[in-house]
Length: 378
Ligand SMILES: Nc1ncnc2c1ncn2[C@@H]1O[C@H](COP(=O)(O)OP(=O)(O)O)[C@@H](O)[C@H]1O
Ligand SMILES: [Mg+2]
Image (tube, rainbow, N blue to C red; front, side):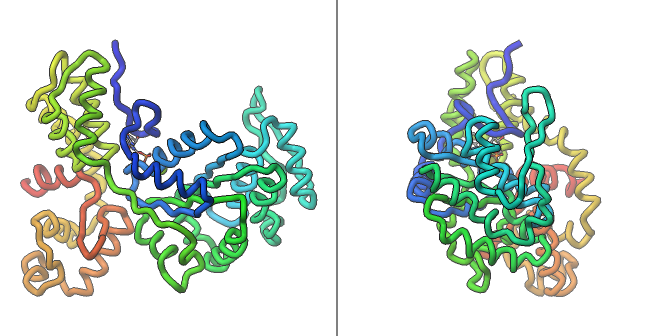
């Protein structure tokens, strides 16, 4: 059986990656001019895919640019942060493990690092360093990228995903101050910091009292435009000998608000149901399939929300804009306007909603569809 020409749940690469021309150009330009960049969007809108693609574009053209990426998703403290940073910087700037060891010995001499291997092909190589101890005097660790890049006469792009995690470290502000103080002096390294909790990241980057204020260019990543999805879906179908009209492809993307992850998932479901040509009915059935498939998950998330939070979501779905007006408070039984503030914060914390320019939006388009068509009609 032919495999479906759509991907979700892993990074979009090669021919699975579409559009983002402008974002790629801006990001490339930033990287090449060593302008630090903060990239922010809700989860699954395509940050990781975009960064990876841009790094590939750059390294394909310029061999003197090295890149390294770390993910702070499971990193809970400074010591773990340094371990990730140092290990990936050394690996990114040295070809073979012999070189890694040499670099580690040269640049981290005082830590007396040893390499340890696990697995057959030296796949898993780690530095044996007492990171907790090293974290007490982190200056060398924080300047490592710069020192290596300078010594090797290359340019290094350090990408850090889920950067908002550092907000949860002990003494986070002091830690952020340290990072900023070192990184802003780097002449051969550029930092790309990104993550999905918009309000937390914007607080870190745009609050004048915070250490990372004005650290670089802030990019708020958007979803991909409907017309681009149309072209992409038509092409992907054609590639496998199936057909879909542009108008239908655009409708498909529209069903899930052009949300990158869901467009790919829905397109896959529609493709699987198509033998020859995908029509409106097939798309409708695919959307129903997707909603059913996720329904169980959504029932679970609803259980973790309070009744008031659910009534608040109902008001949002009904298109109510003045969410703390006396009328809304009464009609949806939301209590006081102070309650509404708390509800918003809690829902934002759970990444159920996002608030930009005062407008509340439910982030997951399929959840939204399920609430409207199933949950609230029961
Ligand atoms: N440029 C793109 N072209 C096509 N699909 C994309 C693109 N960017 C993201 N996607 C889809 O969205 C999903 C999530 O992308 P990802 O880069 O992991 O997002 P994030 O890092 O923001 O959570 C991918 O698995 C893919 O299905
Ligand atoms: Mg990601």
